[in-house]
Length: 253
Ligand code: 6PG
Image (cartoon, rainbow, N blue to C red; front, side, top):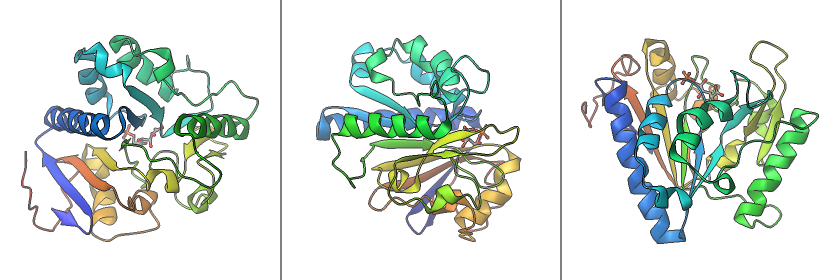
């Protein structure tokens, strides 16, 4: 199904969705090597992408990891060893399992004194990696995102000032609740990527996905992810796609 530039593919379950995402990752990896000689990818935390991370780790092919640079869409302001750390989760499931070199890992530096300090350090790492001059936006090859029931993505939450950021690449998000303070990439970074893929599963996401895909409810941060020139693909299992009404040109996979 196509909704403007966004495309939705629906899968029987999470396993099939992760298999497809793995295949798409490989395609974009090879395309990026042809274009740039390296592959820069942004990973998200949360539960949904875990199956894909495990499949990537099992893939082996150490040579491909030397050409892959892994960044993060967001991070909680906790030590990497903390159960809520996105880096900690990805490190366990993928980075250590696959033996990804430390120089290819670009975590959000959370040992700073404040989320704002971490965001500045993270932005400096991204600018250095891409060799950006002032005002330039990085072009990541692939961004993997999830979506919360409230329509948040990365750590861009409804109504948060971070949604209006147009210049900075990464900002602090102070939540003062159990969600913990965060650091997040901003919409200009996500929307400058060559490929954006959302991974969604479970019935709790169904109503929100319909609001994003069909109602185009721009109060929801996930609906604001619209790559300027890149592709936008929503991968959903049947439960998450249950409220979508328009004919699904793609059918189920
Ligand atoms: C995070 C993620 C966040 C996540 C959504 C969906 O730090 O938690 O970056 O944006 O993608 O909350 O999470 P689930 O995949 O667990 O539903």
